[in-house]
Length: 148
Image (cartoon, rainbow, N blue to C red; front, side):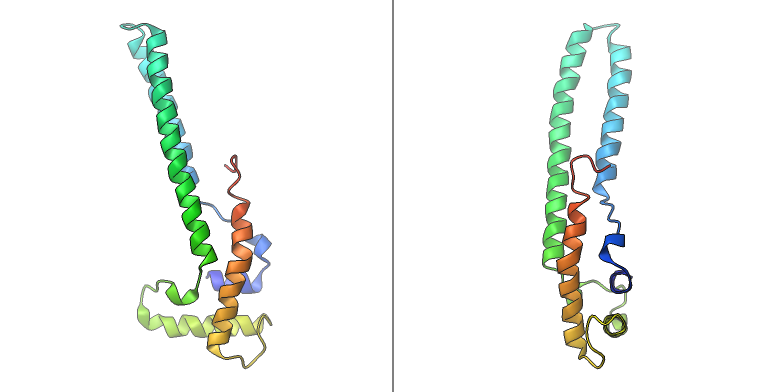
């Protein structure tokens, strides 16, 4: 699917949505909810400032942990994109691999990225180069600190 999209559309039309952003956002919402419920319940028994300090410390540690996981996830994506090769991609059914390679080759020729009659290996290498060149640039745009 990505091969057909990249060969038929400009890479600027690609929208990358890292799944981990949802984890960060959901974690923040859960912590806010837990904090508000805990403050409401615990202020009956304990000084509210103590509760605030404990939760602030916990929030800082949790935030640092989640952000570190997010940074590692982004770095892993960058590494996969910079070392991308279609030959290492997983196929649900390995017997489909020749068909997928043939389709990528046909798309690369149809979009005039490679000349007609080009060998499959050359077309696949051109596709690899296309992904390595264009996708990391688009991925950078979703790595901004406030890209929610």
